[in-house]
Length: 183
Image (tube, rainbow, N blue to C red):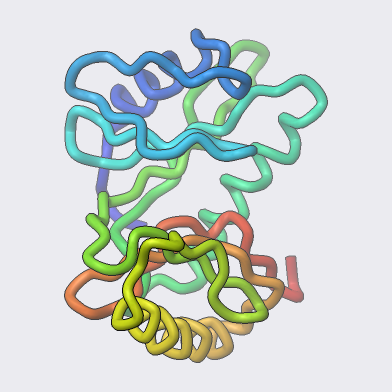
């Protein structure tokens, strides 16, 4: 795990998401912050410190799933630490009422230098922006094979996650959907 992000910024990210009508609406984000993506389980924010904060949604009946998604991502990133496809990251547990904490995955921001959307699954490349060029499609296929080899090496399976390209390398930006046989 890396020393990235702060508890104060993680708490602020939590406040932004949990004071809004997320997951049903799009949160209003204060100056200096940027909404990156609102998913089913979490919302990613780029903090004023230039770091990504992934805040799980506190949906009644879904909280166990959304919290588990964040903790699973942290476990995967910990397992893969030192691999070339893992960005700087850490898990910050934000205190809540009743001795409960909210797991927020904090990660370095990886600007995508490749095709607009890179999501891979066990069957290959999926969820591609239809506007990408043939050259970008080739880059996706090439990087998928590199990413898949890396995941096989770390014994991941049933993979669904998002990747960005940085300096020609595929970098994982969401490993919450990666399941391993031992988990």
